[in-house]
Each structure stands twice: as structure tokens, then as C-alpha cells.
Image 1 (cartoon, rainbow, N blue to C red):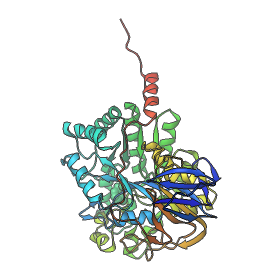
Image 2 (cartoon, helix red, strand yellow; image 1 turned 60 degrees about the vertical axis):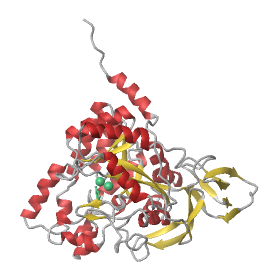
Image 3 (tube, rainbow, N blue to C red; image 1 turned 45 degrees about the vertical axis):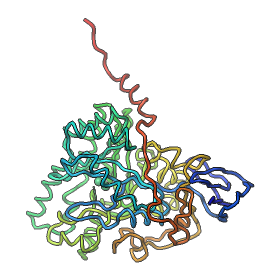
Amino acid sequence: MSLLLKGGTVVTHEETYQADILCEDGVISQIGSNISTPADTKVLDVTGKLIMPGGIDPHTHMQLPFMGTVAKDDFASGTIAALAGGTTSIIDFVIPNPQQPLLEAYQQWREWSAKSYANYSFHVAITWWDDSVSQDMETLVKDHGVNSFKHFMAYKNAIMATDDILVASFSKCLELGAVPTVHAENGELVYHLQHKMIAEGITGPEGHPLSRPPLVEGEAANRAINIAGTLGAPIYLVHVSTAEAVDAIRYAKDHSQIVFGEVLAGHLTVDDSVYQNPDWETAAAHVMSPPFRPKYHQDALWKGLQAGTLQTTATDHCAFCSEQKAMGKDNFTQIPNGTAGVEERMMVLWEHGVNSGRISANEFVALTSTNTAKIFNIYPRKGCIRVGADADLVVWNPEASKTLSAATHQSNIEHSIFEGMTIHGLPETTICNGKLAWHQGELLAQSGEGKYIERPPYAGYYDTLQKRQELNTPKAVSR
Ligand code: DUC
Ligand code: ZN
Ligand code: ZN
């Protein structure tokens, strides 16, 4: 069945105009006025509504086995939450155990994700190194549509990538035309400070941000950027949460390096006062890494988005319920790290970005889908409204409003970091692969209808990178 959206205002990352949109066979087949309606077409009147590309969340962890438990939202509940919030694609993470073959882990995550309601793709984490890892990276890029690899600079004695691994893996990424990404926190410092806090008797959630202060992120961000810069590789920093990391990215970009920065809806709007909550459960519900920061960092993050220093918004959706959080009742280092947000990301960005006047509606589109699609090389198939693009769309009602709450969200957990936040302007209908997937509060998509998104290697900037590198490479002297 085809779908015709009639009477709406199309908003892309670069323009806003009135047009109808016809979706056929999963793609946008016509954009214009007076489109004749093919037989068997559902017509949706979207007068007064905005039509934007469906959101792409480049950072989620559905069903992640982590810190002795498994995240509560799996690829079913997590992608239902995504659709409810106007997000039609997620990029999740395959995280192999150290010594586990990358391809084995990748196959495991593909099995888990087969029940997805929305589209999905995978970054693959590099948690150890030998020749087989290098070989598997090549196979993942060439045969499985993976074009980005993640490096955790924290989580010592678990999944941390040390400098030797960063150097080897970033070099391999450059060779393959893949994007290295980093969770930038100095794992040695975190380890040291966690032990110090516990030794001093600080065992509650308030110890979490004390063990991961802003400089811990600033140091790792600078190190990752400098390693990538030395090798001539691009670099993408996930969940940038501090002014120090924004400064590091800005400095590197000013010096002709190709650096991308992602920010979470949570870090833009929630501050570290949450860890002082006298209710242990509420404070623990906010334990994620990097932690929420003193308020002044939010200003740096918004300015980073406005200036183009940061280009994407994400959530790090990794949902743990109260019972799971209680694993760290006597020791904050045992509280599973993670918060939810895949449903709320676009609404929070709309309210605190567009409604507050920090960003335009077109910038909102760039920051919630288009830039991610470009960086991870799925543009203009995704993140775009044009003929031939995938029909992944969100119909936004700028007049509707609601107050966010765990009582009404789709996620499988009983708390929300956005509890009580009122949003003016809501996703009303989500269209995924040309079909109504979520409409006025009702799930219409089926499990398994989400499609795996292959992301080819090489984004345009690799050409530029190589030329820049040549410009900066001294030539051998002939004697
Ligand atoms: N941070 C989290 O809070 N959860 C999952 C992984 C991560 O890096
Ligand atoms: Zn992370
Ligand atoms: Zn993460």
C-alpha cells in the first residue's frame, strides 16, 4: 500500500516548503502538489503539521550485556520507544568480549536485533587486538556494511582500549575508509578515583561524578584527537559532555583535522545536581558515563552545536531498571551505567533547542538525522526528504504538548531522566520504510519490520583527508 501525506510543511536541513509526499515501496516517489493518488493509497491529512526526516539516533545500547546484567530495553521495546519519539533508525553497538572474535559478536547482535520495529545498524567495538581483529574489521567493512568502529577509553579490566589498540585500530580504519569513534574518558584515572572515593567512604551515587570529573574526559578527548591527527585519520567523539572536550574538538578543527562530535539530549539538559538527590534510587537512576555535569558545561555544548563544533545528537540509550541499579547499593562503582532517552531525544531537542531559540527547525533536522546520515555515509538515502530517499519520516505537530514521564514512556524502566519536562511540539506520526509505524499514540509496526542498514565505507571526506595529509607530509630528501 502507498501512503500520501497531504497538506503538510516539509522541513529539511536546508529548506522549508509546502508539499505533499507520496511514499511507494518504501521510498519517497513524489514530492509536490496535486499528486494523483494511485489505487490502494492511504491518504493522511497533515495540514498544519511539519514533515521531517525520521530521526537517526547514532548511539544506543539495546539488550547490552554490561556490568553483570543486561540492559532492559531489547531491540523490540527499544525500537518501539524510538518510533514513539519520531526516530526511525538507530545505530547500536556490537561489543565483543575481549578475545571474542568480532564476527561472532556481530552475528550475535544481528540475531538479537532481528525483532526490531525500526531500522538499525551497528558500530563494532574494538576491545582487544591481534591480527584476527584487523582481519575481521576488514570483513565487517567489505561484507557486512559496517563503516565505524568504537573504542572505549574507559572501563579498565573490561573493554578498555589502550593507546596501542587505538593506534592499531585507527590506522586500520583509515586504510578501510571507516570512521573510528571513541568514548573519551581516561580509564586509568577513573579506576584510581573510584578506589579513592570508596576508600574515603563515599559509596553512594554522589561518588560517580567525583570519580569521573571533566578533566578525565578532556584528557582522553585530546589524546584520541591527537592520535587520530598524527595518523591522519578522522575521529568521532561520542557523548561529548564537557567544555574541555568541545575546546579540544574546536582546536583540532581549527587546525584542519577532521573531527566529529556527538552530544546527548541528557547532557544538554540535565546537570550533576541529580547525584545529590537524597533518594538513593533517583540518584542511581542517573548514573551513566560520562556523568551529568555542572550546569556551565551545557552552555558549551549548546554553543558547540550552534557553531558546528558538534554535529550530532544521540542518547546512549542503555536502560537499567531500579532492581538492576540496586546492584550498586553499597558501592556506586557497581551501579550499572546507563540511562534511557531514545524516545525523548527529538522532543527534548525541539523544546530546548527550537522553542528556546537556540537552533532553527532546519538545524534541528540536521542535528537529529541529516548530519549523522552524512558522517556515517547513508546520506541521501537517510536523513533526507527527496525523491528516491527511504520513506522514513516524522510528522510533527507543533501545537501539541505533553509532560514527559516514566509513567507514559515506552521504555521498560520505571524512571526517566526527563521526568516532568513539558514539551511543546510533538511527534504525532512516524513513518518507517514507507509504512505508518506509530500514529497518534498507537504502535502499527510489527516486530521484524525494521531493516538492517548497511553503511558503505568511504565518506567523501576521505579524499580530502588524503589530500590534506599529502599537503602536510614532508617529502623524503634525495641525497
Ligand atoms: N556509558 C553508559 O552509561 N552506558 C553504557 C556504556 C557507556 O559508555
Ligand atoms: Zn560511552
Ligand atoms: Zn554508549
